[in-house]
Length: 89
Image (tube, rainbow, N blue to C red; front, top):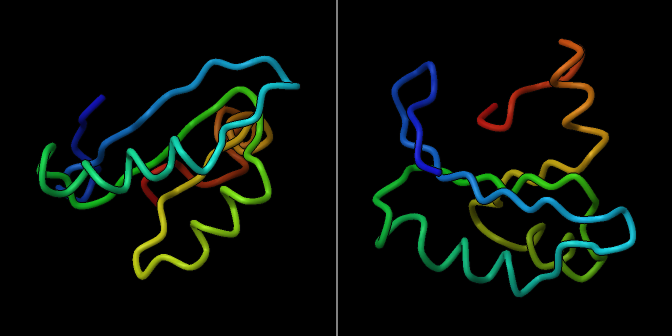
């Protein structure tokens, strides 16, 4: 999904509705990172899941110059409750 942030940036959101035991892998992050700027013409990207991320996905993302926003089930609940940041923040 492509959307505008409140400050006017383009955001690409990749959503993964997974069971708790099915974590998002680094391969998903590779795909999003490789397409959000050139293909989708977005300024930033977030991967949102009802599960969590593998440690290799988190480690790989941490090493990026412009890391993707990773939103697992805990972050989604916090955002919905108004106690956590939005995926574009």
